[in-house]
Image (cartoon, rainbow over all chains, first blue to last red; front, side, top):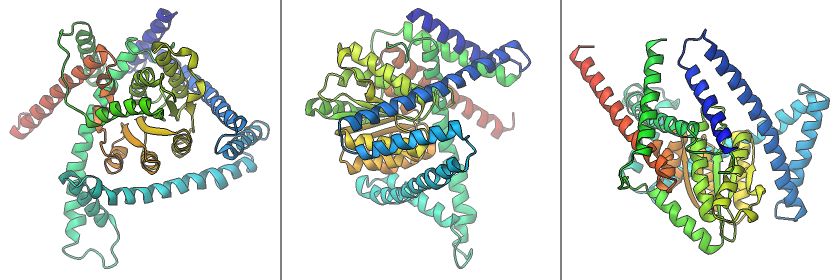
Length: 209
Length: 248
């Protein structure tokens, strides 16, 4: 069974990989597209399984009267009401849109705002945690870039215009871009070797091995 | 086939050759890599969590395997396999949170494999591998709740995360638990630089397996990456030199 799983993973991985390199009108590209579509369908089924798992975890929490059980009840009620509405009334129904616009979007926006506060706080603590040259450079660059991007009440007066016209573009387009590309090259190399390990069955994240 | 496709295919073939060659024809001596402080801290944290009877929380991010963000998730799963084996025998087994359905299923499978390898399959609880949300912030909110309610002493986030990872590391600090995090997103890495003591930057994420004794394939993988990185550096420098001298 294990050999069978590895053989399927290897052949599908190889077909999809080769499909990226051959000309677009060949059969291999059509095969790749079909396999990727199947993967998307499987991923959707996996979401359903994941939601059932989420439900199971919160149900256990309620049954065992664990801390935060009230939130678990809220989660289960919200989950079922949204699912029932979506299935029977349709995803375009005003009630479901109310769920999205009045609950989900504001909640996510709140967390986004909280993130901004968290980052300011983390930056302020950085020098206390790690008072080294890199921290000073990091904060100095962040402050310069912020000042250069901020609309100042008195306009671009010398020498502040040097920040927005010269220093900030130099920092962001030369140093930041170069650093970011270096990081991305390293990540791409890591991604390729990790993918190849999975394709050859060296790393088997499936089948309980 | 275009020249880009041929070069791409050639690159993949060279990487495959290096990976398989270094895996199966490795020297007897183990290759030595530089110290990455975050992984040393993680090793200590694993020991403490087993000794103290506290829990390890592993966040695998929200990179679904059918998306381009799947590679860090695969690296996270390889690390999870080792962590599960090392910590499953503790009083409180590790919990794993993820933000994609396929990743949640694989995390449970990997956890079970770790328990099996440690000879503790009978105490494996599927509820320890969870999907906590499908959007970036709902995932993090669910992971923070799990971290707060389950007596967690150390948090290890490895996978695809965006800037929302800062909320996770901030919550870890508020609960006085250790936080180690790695992501492939450069913007999120910048945030990690401010919010954790030893940030894992760039390709260090993919070194997790090699630093946790996941096998010779992981060591070979890291060696192959190093060789290819040097090749790319030389090509870039050569290209720049040719451009400067007007040959290209």
